[in-house]
Image 1 (cartoon, rainbow, N blue to C red):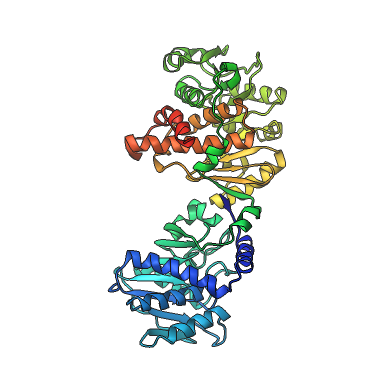
Image 2: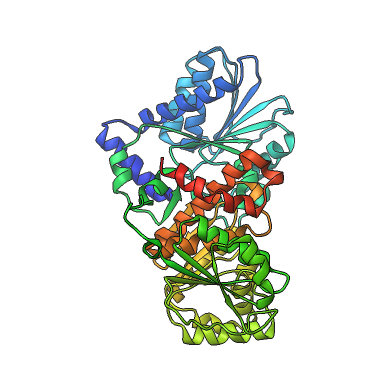
Length: 504
C-alpha cells in the first residue's frame, strides 16, 4: 500500500472532487459522518464530549461532527477559535453556520481571550484544531491549549492528525506542543510520521476511515513510501515447481559465529533453511562445529583455520549470496579478515551485526562495501556507522542519503522495519510484535534475507519480503508462546508457516 505525502493526498482529494463532481463540503460531510459513527460506536449520548475546532478545514470537520452528534441526541461542548474574527476558511464558516442553525447548542466562539473548560479523566476531547493544513509549528495561545489538553487526563480523539504533528517530517518540532491523542482517526491514509517510534505517544490507537475517494488516482499516483502487507507478500511469493532440485533454490554462504556465539550462526542458518534456500554453508571457527552440526544438521560446515574466531574468509565456491556478520566478534583477526574479504570480493553481500561493528571501527571500509549489498543495522549499529541520531526520522533521512550515495540497500530494523533502496524508495513493514525484541531475532532475519536472494528474488523484493515473513513468523510464534515468552528460535521455527500463511 502506498503511503502518500500531504501534498500528494491533497492532489488525490482534488481528483476526487473532479471525477465524482462533488464539492469540498461534500467530502467533509463524508469525513464527518465516518468520524461521528466512530465516536457514537464508542460512547453514549450521556458522555461529556468537548470539541475544539480550529479556523481551517480541520475545524470545519470538527464542526460538522458536532452537528451530526447534536442531531443524534449528544450534547457536545464546542469551542471554535476565530481569533481574528474573520480568519475562518470558507468550509469552516459554512459548517459553523450549519451548527449554529440547529439552535439549543453549547457553542463558544473565541475571538480574543479564552478560559478553557475544566477537563477530567471522564471526558472525551475531540481535537479538530489543526490537521494536515498546518505549515509551521504551533505558537501563541495554541501551545498553552495543547499542553492543557495533554495534562487534563481526558481521552483525546484527533481528526486526521494530532494537532501540531506534521504528516511527514517533525525534526525540530517542540514535542510539548503536539496533542497526545488516545485515538487518531486518519482520513483515508496513514501518514509517514505515524510509523516513527518517537511519534507513537502522539498517535495512540490509529484507525483509518474510508472516504470513498478516487481510487484510480490512488493507483496512478507515484509515491516513494510503501507499507508492506500480506497481499504484497502474496503477490511476490512464487509457488515451487514439482520438478526441481536443491540447486534450483540457491546456495548461501553464512560467515557467522565465534567461540561462545555459535547460537548466532545456528539461528541464521535455521532462518535460511526454513526460508527455502536449497543449500546453506556456514563458515565458522572450529570450536563451533559440534553445536552447529547438532542444531542444524541440514547445513554444510566450512572450518576456519582459527579455533575461536573467523580469521579468513575464503570463497572457494560460487554462491548465490554471501551473508557476513552474525556473532563473528570484532576481534583483530576477524576485522583483518573482513577487510581483506571486502577489498577482494566485489559481488553484493549481506552485512549484519558484528560485520557492521567491524566496519564502524574502521570507517574507511564503508567505501569498500560492494554496490548492491544489503546492510541490516538496528538503531545502535546504524549510529555507529553513520553518526548518532536522536530519532527514527533522522535515521531514515540519513539512510536514504547513504543508500543513494553507496548504492546499497539498508534495512533499518525496528517495530516498523524500513527497507531503503538506492533509488530513494522506502518499504515499511507491517508485521511483527514487541516480543521479537529479543536476542538472535536479527540473526534469523539475515538468514531469511539470504535465502530469498539465493532463490532469485531481486534484492529489493527479497529484502522486504524477508522482513515481512520474519515479522509474520514472530506473530505466529507469539500466538503460541506470547510476546514475553517468544525467543528467536521460535521465529526461525515458524518461517515456513509464515510463508504458507502469506501465500493463502
